[in-house]
Length: 268
Ligand SMILES: [Cu+2]
Image (cartoon, rainbow, N blue to C red; front, top):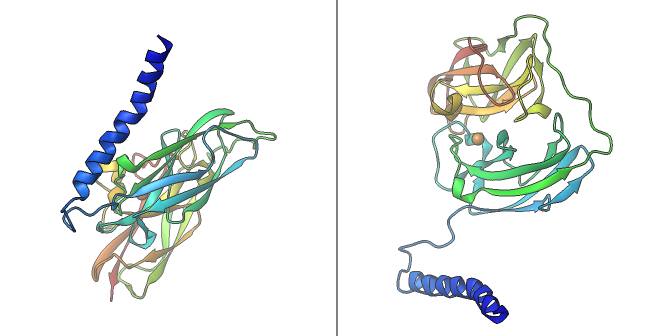
């Protein structure tokens, strides 16, 4: 009986292997250039190791990324085959869009215990290539946890754009968008974390803040400083509207929206 089970166990491994070998031979035979092989983006998580115990308040996230060109200068602009960025996801909450295979996840407002970190390639419009998503679990056992970040509830949050001025002409690789945020705590350590009143971050969008995925299709970047170097690589010459909008930790805009916009002429 034991042998039977053992054989069955081997069969579980060997049979699929045979199927894979046969299928790949079949796919490879005589189809030169018809079906490109290995063009699907592929991510491997090098760090954290699955099941790793984390006692520090940050986790180095190190990936190996194949068949996917990282270019955040094109985020929020039309999709380009084989190019985009990757999304760092913590417990199903989007943390950030990233263009470096090495980054750090700050464990702020994260409860001790098991957590799931995921990395998934995303197109310029932030649509995720779900088939290529990879995950690792880690067990957060902080030696000295950070005190939680709380919101700033001093009044109505607002944002205004200081520069450029409406009607200005911008050119070159980037231009500086400078803005002023009030009565709101900008905290990028809370990206993807549960909502906390009076805190969040900003999104910069081009031409619209509306549409699916909470308006993120045209989002160029998210951040927490009061300036953003707007890349013009994927933006056509002509008149464009650039928006700064305040959002909560899970990227949802407020209702009514807290946003500011400037219309500029992009010259190339
Ligand atoms: Cu994205």
